[in-house]
Image (cartoon, rainbow, N blue to C red; front, side):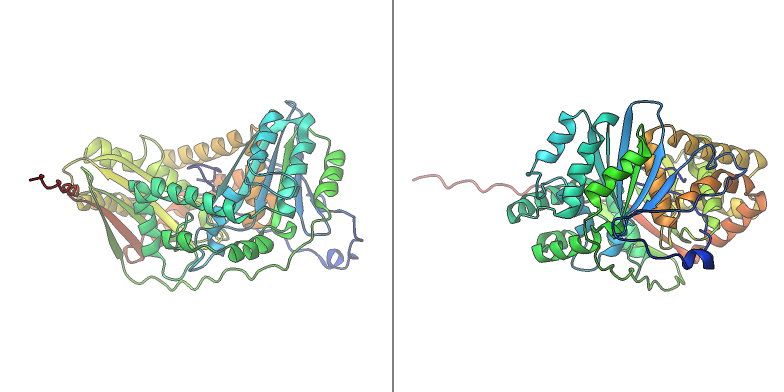
Length: 479
């Protein structure tokens, strides 16, 4: 589904940006210190358009992109910083480095001592958080509008010169390693998901986990971190999104004051995706001491540039959204062999997976659940959804999108994602209309192209006995 942070992380949609005309290309380069404003977007006839939902886009001479959306409903603002770097920008030996930087960005900079960042934000009545995904790393703060300059001051400071002190690196890497143990090594869903992507992809940068392999976390070097920071945490690799109660002219002047003189860096080469075509089903097992079997299944799916991603959102809703979904009805309600069944699809920069997750009832084998899931998919491919199912899915996706735009934070999240993944925030304006245009035949066609057994990967959770604790050696009795 194209709702951001649906599972603690991200999602979205597609609309190709029109190429600039010759007149636009011929415009002179702006002088140093000036801000370039994007051309006005023509009004749209759709339910979500620039007239009802105005956004201003500017670019500083150092390449920093700025999106501004004024909303004076409440005296508060949200400030997002989207860095175009995620685990896909990594490689063997440095997996997890993007997520590690998410942590380090809260651990001090040139003029903000370690542990002071959160104290400054919170003492001004604000809150902050961040996330790392395969495609990006993003940070946000919510604060009263009269404290906006505080955010610009501390956030520009960490973009300009992050404090990567050896002692801080050493302590924070232990925090990251513990997070990996908690969310992956000792979490069933995390283990299956990691194995699914590592098995499904051979050469895609999505192969390794966002949190990184433990061996790479153990060997992380400071010089690698410094180089990574200079490359990816540069203004020309960042999108600032400000939403809420502010004056655009004043806010833009402040952004230029704090961020305008941060030097741009030489952009890195885009990650190479050399993933070959999958020509047969792939399988893996995760053996762990549990009571019941589970499995995850992933079918190869196109990237965000494909129009089919809109249809896949709808299919995901039909198959796995709520108790009335086809999977829940079949596996949980009718057959009563599973405790839970769900789907997950998120549009990404590179080709990705359309995922299924099924937790079986104790005593029920995963293969039985797979057989039922296959029946559900086979029927969908052959018959397509019913008109009622299609309409319900469209309504749900439209409602989710509209609800996400009710808060400053939600607006900033949507705008940042659209601008990053598709290169144009204006994608948002066509989202609802694209869902509405999906037909029953579209659903059959995309289901037929996606749910191909030869292009799927299955990971099963196999219960094993709890390892016996080693008996402690008793001391010998004294004579």
